[in-house]
Image 1 (cartoon, helix red, strand yellow):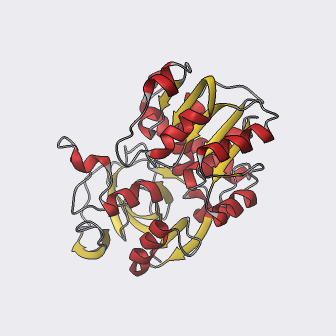
Image 2 (cartoon, rainbow, N blue to C red):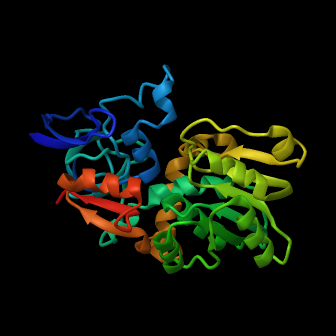
Image 3 (spheres, rainbow, N blue to C red):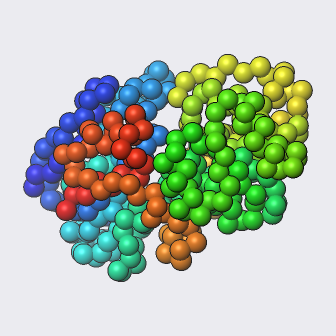
Length: 338
């Protein structure tokens, strides 16, 4: 059969390739017809623009051109291998398949998850992003009522804010893009502050917290300069959680902003979900995707306001440029293959 697959052939370029995909399956393989993908803005823009730190790492075999983006997919099973159990043709599954019309996966893939019948598939695309966002609450030492600032209200910052709110924290997200503030408010995020220069942001935080400040700051953008802002905003003996993957080096005055203040800094990359030390069991990403599916289905985690565009594959280059330039009110962009 012929399939289409989205490719970054080089920096700043997008192409849709057509190639042959055999319908022959190994005993443990599944053939999937993709229905829709969700663009992961941070990771995919870094790969599209060549700013992903992996490009400079000779040991990294993933961040290179040509690159085939995407890791959030919902599709329909077309055919299964002889030894596949528990999955059948016409089942709808969430997976980590990239942006393509058809693909194959092993039935042992822990991120291959059968979805409930009649579920809103557009909203369930966000379960993987929500699980990634959950790394910040998992790694943060906090209690109900603790004051937490979250820098950035992209998809990850928005979902992280909601998850902290659901657990009883007092959340103060910071954002400079007006439409992202509106999306956050529509998702039930209560106290959004205007981002900007550090002294201005700190003044706002002091005012809304009755001069108590924040003991925890989550950096959710990946913008290198905002790591320093997070360190400056947090109270002495506080915690800074680096949820956004930084797109470059950060110059930090360690003595002033970490050592002297007694700050704890933690990295919250998604791969910590696969650490049994953190999660307590193997396949932590699968575990938290399933939890996020439950939160979405119950309406406690509000993802529908995050959906700003539904596009055809042919429009994907426009979509990346909307996200890059923060144009057209773009945030959650779904690629529909059907």
